[in-house]
Image (cartoon, rainbow, N blue to C red; front, top):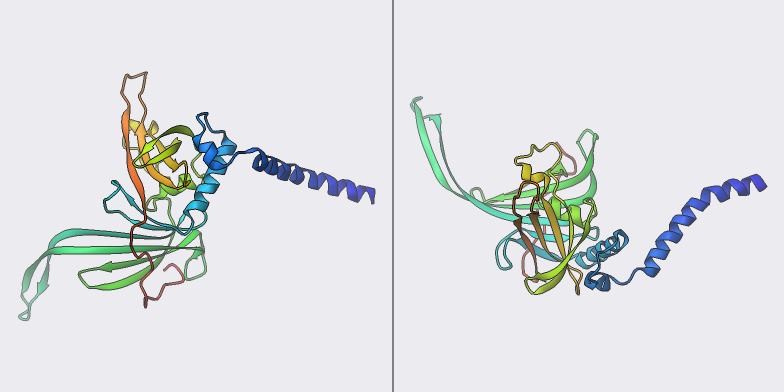
Length: 276
């Protein structure tokens, strides 16, 4: 009996210590609004608390990511975990081209085509594992991608696995803590007072660096100190004292809340359940 109790005690103690540590942080860490407004740098534990509350504030909200506060951009419906449930993207482009075909007399003729196509893409992040139709697990989330082209005025749907190059992936990597974040400054961002959480800019796996600057690039996620909602994401390059290169001011995108838009997948379009 004593040996059983000893083994049980040694197995439980590490877990108990971890739980007590989490409880202690929760009891001693001030509310996120107070953390964000404090002039002192945030500790790693405080950053975790702020990100948790920012994800809760974002849950089920729809916003537009835009380079200006009034401009166009993709619509995002958020989940509860700091990642999107659905993204709707609209774009358009002109096209020109041609081809060779045989006419009714069997002679070759060339046809030229040109015009404009409007494209709507809706990405549904299912939170289910992506598998091929033969049952092979692809090791990531199943994404159903719906597409509508104005040239044929119909919706299509395909299944695929989520990738590291998803639209707005750096933003959501910061929200979910995939990117290690540090404390930044408090500043005015549009009509908001916001605190920056900063981290390194990372190229997607396998991407080839296009410039030495990319190793020095930093990204920032600005959190409103009252609503706890993210209000801007930006990239900047700090000054380099070694080379004398000046800082490059940040540029990025705004989270625009309160607008209208439909991010739902189209009705009447069957969603595939596996990746072909």
